[in-house]
Amino acid sequence: MTGGTEQTSVLITNARVLDVEGAAYLEDRNLLIVDDTIAEIGGHEVGALRDSDVIDAGGRTVLPGLIDAHVHVTASTADLSTLGEWSPSYVAARASHILRDMLHRGFTTVRDVGGADHGLADAVHEGYFPGPRLLFGGKAISQTGGHGDMRPMDRVVTDAHPCRATISVVCDGADEMRKAAREQLRTGAHHVKLMLSGGVASPTDRVDSTQLSLEEIRAVVEEAEAANRYVAGHAYTARAVNRALRCGVRSIEHGNLLDETSVELFRKHGAFYVPTLITYRALAEEGLRYGLPPGSHRKVSEVLDHGLRALELAHRGGIDIVFGTDLLGGMHPHQAREFDLRAEVQPALDVIRSATSVAARLVGLPGRIGEITPGAHADILMVEGDPLQDITVLSRPDKHLKLVLKAGRVMR
Image 1 (tube, one colour):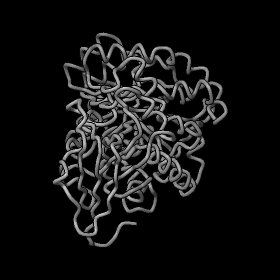
Image 2 (image 1 turned 180 degrees about the vertical axis):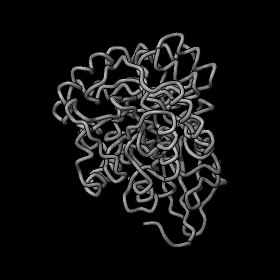
Image 3 (image 1 turned 45 degrees about the vertical axis):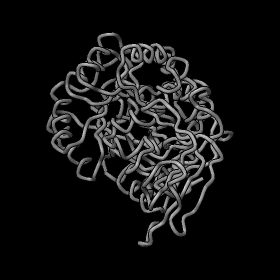
């Protein structure tokens, strides 16, 4: 647990530092970390403070801690409808293992887009759970019968109690949407998530549907902007994506069926695209095993084959692309495999930027995370190998990842 005021310091020596934005390696560097911050980077003139812990990198590659901008850390089952039936304390206990394992894969910051709350984020921050820095949005907002409405067709009643461990709330009309957004923001949410189209995990909607009226979307965007926050939007089809972008949604999640018109709107509005390719591979292969209902499993094929094409369109269009995974249940261990899929379309440097500096801009923390510079949080990885030449250096952390520092503390 955190506590105490005594200053701590770490000196990393003989490091090959990846300058993500500069697209270059800084050879034979020393990094001085004081408390949770990178204090100095330089040559051998950068030395230890009294009582500094010294770590000799031995020429290995050092790069910023990774950012996964689309996770559900409470989703320890792929049957999301059952989460609301579980005790919140049980869900939190299972989430603690998911968080720990993410950190051990090198992810030092994650953005939860449905499920995690301020209590879980505080538990991580205060050291009760080891895990990445947790940027939470609370519960996603869905219309009746939308992607966040997990009721089967024959159930009428809903239970909206805030302590239920669901990933979303269901409401209708601009006024209800405003109130729901304000409730999430009241608890310190870093963003608000809207369900803007059908999806795979929901039982009663079509993937190709659009959800929420333009008035409802704009109401939530207004509330988020008033709080100096932003809206993330779940959307698959070009029609759903384009409606969201025109209304001011800042990040589009998934977007497997976007098209050239969508790319133009991304550029026009300066929005971010967060593909989540690995989840479809994992759901197709293992979804049924980990609780995905058969009806949802049948939907996977509708989006699986389009993900790489959408990524290629986005990359060719020069828009900001961010790393995300969206894994559920026992499929969370596949998180780092997203690097392999992205590398089928993007150069390794662009994939790494998507999980560092570009993601940092999306979440509003440039200069603090996603880079190794003085003044940034000391979120640092040390790996064996050259990730610019071989992306499996990042996608196989069990083999290549040698050290994880989060906020200056050795976590692995």
